[in-house]
Image 1: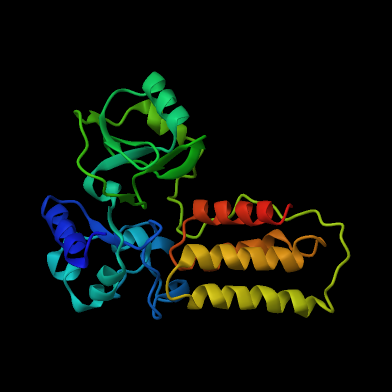
Image 2: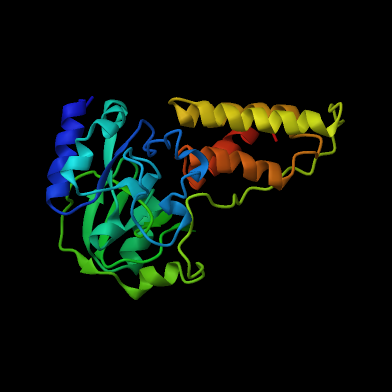
Length: 282
């Protein structure tokens, strides 16, 4: 496993080349917000339309924490994050790039047939195709394809091979239905509540409210292992409230909001929810 010194040294080298960088925790997620910035109480940048971190000295607010400043990267406020870091990420839009994240073999075949050749970086499951130019980021523009540019981050996996091409209209067209305003970090889930039909075990509406509030608090208080925590709590909520029809999309949205405030991505939340439903046979 790469040491703290290795991650920080790598980040400093990338920052010197002009790439805004940030530490990633295990599971490829960003560091969770500090107590001051929790739930964006500080008015952090992901709730705004301009890039850049808030006044907090810690690496809060996911992509917005990315920086090229070596003094920030090596500051005491960032030291705990580097101790937990499992990888280094960069903000593509902050350096004038767009990454087309191809997550499987079918997505790669589609890209080779429909997109111009450009610099390619191998990933654990597929490839990153890098283009010169920026655009609105958007996940799941087609099966296995995400776009990472403005207000997003990508894991640093090396410089790649090939000559970088200008951002083509074919990539921009994939996000043409995206709203003009950039998407905030806390996004609406695309999952739906179950129709229910089982016998309701709730003694009162307060029982469900208490369960949702407890799950929110436990996600918020999780010091690490946020992927496991989110999945475990989604599983618990669905087990207790998922079959009777009382669980609404508003409740699900609250759980997703709590998870995203800790740095979990919308896609990871949706995957955790789907996996929990599968585990319970829903």
